Length: 139
Image: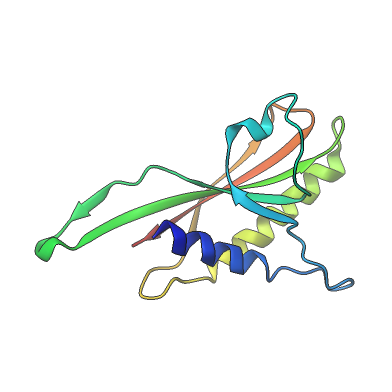
C-alpha cells in the first residue's frame, strides 16, 4: 500500500509545472530522513524538494480477515537558503498550499481521498525551510 501511495503522490507532484517555463515545480521527490534538516547536511538534491514521511498506522482486522487503516503521510516541502529569507519561506508556504490543494483532489482506486489534517513549519534551522503538511487516507 505504501508503494501505491508513494507512486500516486509522486505522479501528482510531477503534474505541478510553472506555466511560464513549463518546468516541473518540484525538483526532487524522495522518502524523508530527519538528517536532511540537521546542521552540516550536504545538499545532494535540487530544491524545492518534497519528502514523504509515513507515520505509524494502526490496522484493524474486520470480519473475513479484511483489514482497514487510517494511514497518515506527512509531506516535507524543503528548500535551502541562507539566513532568514522571508521570500523563501513564503515560497515554501505557497508551494505547500498548492500541494495540499492538489492532493485533496487525488483519490486512490477504491479508497478515500487524501484529507489534510495538520500543517507545521520547522522553525529550528536557519538554512532549511521545511513546511510540513500531514494527510490521512482511509484504506
